[in-house]
Length: 332
Image 1 (cartoon, one colour):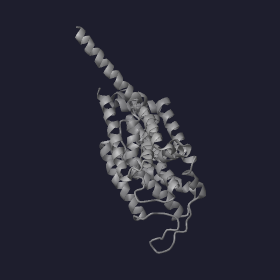
Image 2: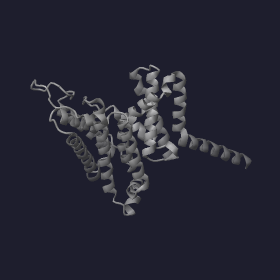
Image 3: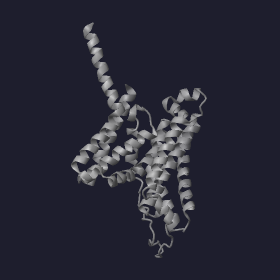
Image 4: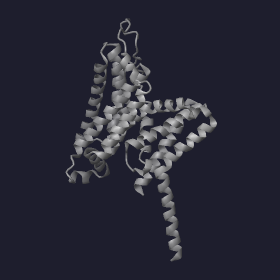
């Protein structure tokens, strides 16, 4: 009898320890990394570097917020990187090739991205293709579309056009400011706050969480599941588009597949967010904290002169660890 009670107490303590690290592990890791990197390089904790980290994670966070919304309805959008690339290409080309103003350029990029979201929604909801498979297919389709649209070239001011002439369009100075500090950070913070409030404090956000938790129960409760799944993929495409637009403003060019490198970081940030403060679900605040963790890792490793080609090993490890904790918790 006493032996059984002792065993139960030990199991409870182990479970409580896991719960503690599940809730606060990400934040503890961030604090530990700050201490380690600061000890290794005193410049790490300087104000300029902190601003640099926030700027570096802005685009990742915005794109990851889109993934977060798709995860909230138990979906998964892998096409966000390609959508960001497409949005980037369109907004820059509107300036450089067609000499359009900022409003037209931004609306054109967002409209094209919404079409991608609508395609994903139709194929997933109506044709019943699994989310991951459909958005994987869309990723390649949109990636090819962006390459075809730009003819595989880097779009920039004063570029040489296929007919040998110089592009005459100029990027608006107003648009150029979007990618600068503090605006790029402000856009990120506003995005996180809006989606956090939407998911946690509105009826529609709560419905999305209900759908993500139990789709059939949500349907029996009268929630229009399909409509909310459509909305989730449209919003995911919208935020991927915003990320691509901010990226375009930051670099002032459209490189080939410029949004692709942001996919893995965004996925990692969204999944890390599941465990932040024990949320147990996709959430905007957790996604932001996940992006901060990735940003600190990247910045610190660069300061320690770790080769750039080793970065993916670290990011892949972080993602695998986040997935392991998330799915272990869901099964326990």
